[in-house]
Image (cartoon, rainbow, N blue to C red; front, side):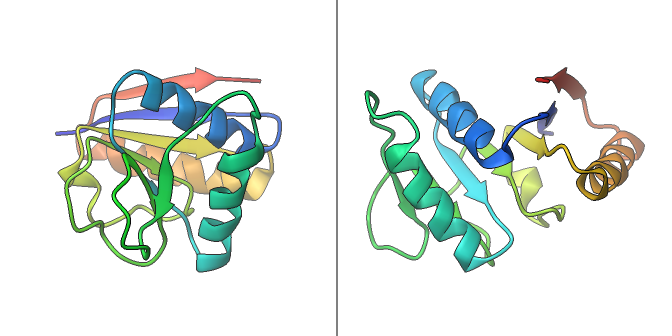
Length: 136
């Protein structure tokens, strides 16, 4: 049963996600980042190359045939198991139970927070361990 962490941010959710991805990677984890669309996956891929010039975060799009500890995808479950799922899609991925941990990034706008509240209720109803982090 995965542990679920909600990260509420008041700034740019994509930049926050980049920092979270880098931090989780530095702790030795493999990560799958789930976005809503191919455009969002590509934008995150580009952002991870540039958000912190002094660091290297090895990643690849799920559609690429490259091995990387960080994979970014949008419309399918990852083929291989990863231990951390970072969900940026706005939906609860059907495959989230395959992961040891799930991170839900909650952006500042009210629509996204309403969706996050619904996700929180779903996970709580199912009995998952949930942690909340206010990153404001």
